[in-house]
Amino acid sequence: MLTTKQPLAMVRTLGLAIVATVGLASCATYDDEFATINSRLDQLDTKVQGAAQSAEAANQSAQQANQRLDTIESRVQALETAPKRKPRG
Image (tube, rainbow, N blue to C red):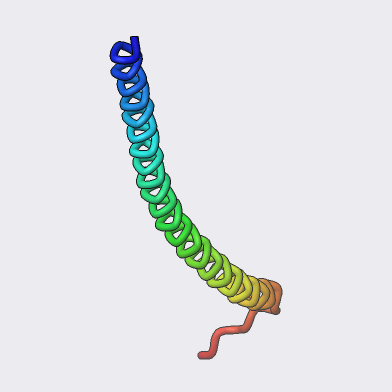
């Protein structure tokens, strides 16, 4: 009877070892996938930060352009409301 139980125990032990090995291998696979995803997220974060900086610079340029336009607009209004000059001659 001992001879039949011993192979069953070995088969069970071998089965557990295979399951454990496959389980550990799949964890390593998930670690690789998480590392890949984290790398992609880091790249996207860098791109988003660059785009945000570009947008901020464009916003500042637009504000400066608006200030110049306001200055020009006030000059134009002053010229339009100024009394007309008589032509020489």
